Image (cartoon, rainbow, N blue to C red; front, side, top):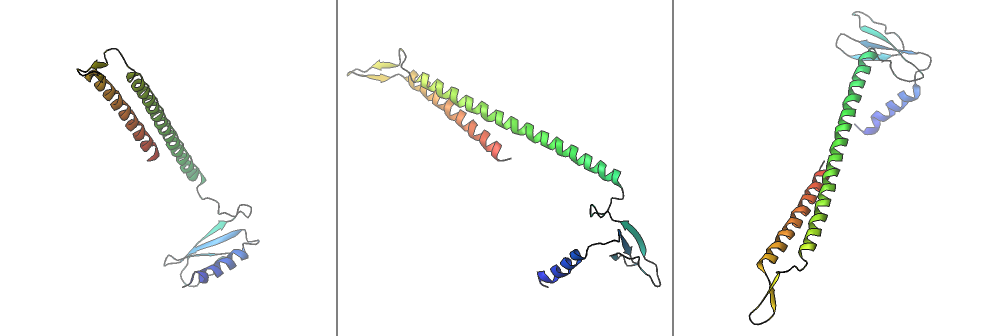
Length: 166
């Protein structure tokens, strides 16, 4: 069956519209088949269950049978949605705070490394043949400061990953 074979009846039905009827009749036969019409059904033999459904032409919708229940459900949904939005906003703020803290830690670690690379008394010792070489303490200091920078950058990358993965 082509897509267009269903489209033509739907377009024709939409063009008809409900004129002055202001109500639609919903009928359910003994087999459970539902039928909608503008006129009350004429039944022969077994009776079908029929319900008149009033139509508001200004809204073009079927009025709700139980508005209080629907309103309660909508209010509960809005409440859940507001709570979820609040939770999501708090999580986003928390992620942004983690990123800001990680960026600050990277800046501090880089500043400490720059300061640690400055020559301090006792950083170099003389060689027997002349010249100087760095002491083991200087090398360990710079290595530990570089390791702190690397760890801070890794934490920042994790914070960005966590923010982008949600």
